[in-house]
Image (cartoon, rainbow, N blue to C red):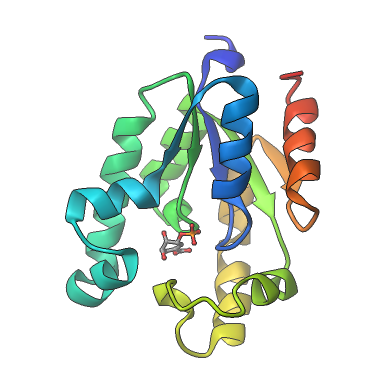
Length: 171
Ligand code: S3P
């Protein structure tokens, strides 16, 4: 299968711009846009924070894994994933095998700035700076292992979009 027939997958840490960049890419490439966090919320009938609070992280990860395995079957899509989807080995393998995967790479300072007034992300509700640094350090090799391309996402949205399009030969 040609890589241009594969779903385009955006992975990366919280606030790396997966949704914003994904929506932009889907317009340019005339593909459907899918946000896995949004699908999880719809399926469970609760916001992400409430899902974590009521059912715990393992339940959230199980649902996330299931939804990714479903949506990856569609080819003509751009998929924005949740920042922790790479924690599951089966998901990492599935994404890499079935999709064209872009890691939107950012540094802790940018995450701090972009999540300044945000209290919707359950993993960053307390000891935010410490959490960002620890989680990023724990996950970096998993993003790297899953990605086909690494994109500098500290830059404005337009730059990341054009880097994705040119580096992958889509334009
Ligand atoms: C998470 C990232 C969130 C969401 C959940 C867990 C993570 O998605 O899936 O809060 O573990 O990094 P975003 O990356 O879209 O914020």
